[in-house]
Image (cartoon, rainbow, N blue to C red; front, top):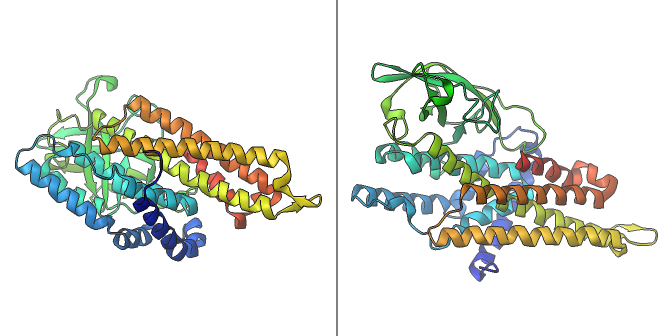
Length: 383
């Protein structure tokens, strides 16, 4: 794939109109955290039939699983995910935080269940996440652990008869304050050394006794994506909530790594949206901002900045195209490849956003010109 098809362009145009009519008028309240993004996202899902497509794919997969088809989860997608990446790109041009809120619910949380859960668990929790009827969060990060997510993990599961007792706290959890469904990742406490303990994943529902969800945290950017903390105190769960319904289902460490791969490969689409918007606004500003008797776009320094933005746009678009082609073929990246994609695209988005602020000068530091917001939002892609 070397360019968007005519069908893709039509979707681009339709999604862009939706952004202009349904998202841009609400950016102010979304940015100030006054309005959670979920109702707007649900409207987008219904407008473009994303909920119907998700339900149809889900029903086909469940039917194959019940018929005994082993490779049910590896069905090649005809479009390679292109039609779902387009809303991600266009949302990131306007309000990147909404993509994070959507992606963690529809993507990471549902993927954790769909990849390692039993058919019964998928039917119980995953469909509502895939259609965004319910909000999901994927809880792995803890106050004392960042990159060393498994090594420093203190959240625990202790056997108690046929049940488990869960304890621990999680932080920086996207959708945490509003999540209906939570995938909670912890270690099985068998009295052995922490480094040797199994990693297990459990599905929790909001309102369970002993589960506390914090209010949204204040942060640098991505204000339209609610982020919070989770606190578990002696939360009792049955084995039906253990992903895979067995401690040997590889739903812990292996499942989390698979989810990491999906998250990292999606960063390229987010970066592309940020870069495209920064580039478009910078070109327009360079044509119209007059200094020293001429548009600033006539100066070679500004031309060089814009040229480098275009190089970054082309590279990130090619990474997105590669993601689409791999998905079409029913293949996926290695964790190393997905990490490399995240490294480059996140760095490119941050550099382009900061250069856009520089092109705008003092105006770039002001909220009304948007590049200030995009620079703040881009930073989290690197973290």
